[in-house]
Length: 126
Image (cartoon, rainbow, N blue to C red; front, top):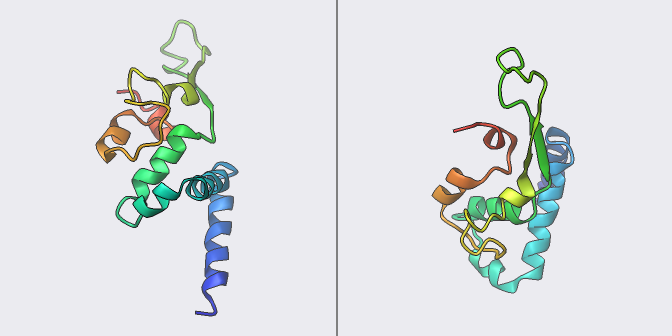
């Protein structure tokens, strides 16, 4: 038991160094949301923590935009043209998300189909 604080510190440092600033900012946002909403404290447990983190990153994205090349510069007549995906706007698009501005623990399938707050999902295409 006396090693638990040291283990927790190790995990937090690992997250901070592995993901740049977005990981500790997400942890901070997730903690703050729980402190600000007593109802959520009773709803979030080990069974739905993934849904909780997805919803936190949907409403409070740590990365607001991602730029990428939609096609290989060699295959595109407009080589070098970048697209910008506005994550913060996409993650609150009312045409995609029911009650887009409300914090709702949604089905994981909805996050898998629509969430683009992580780099690999944001530029994965279809």
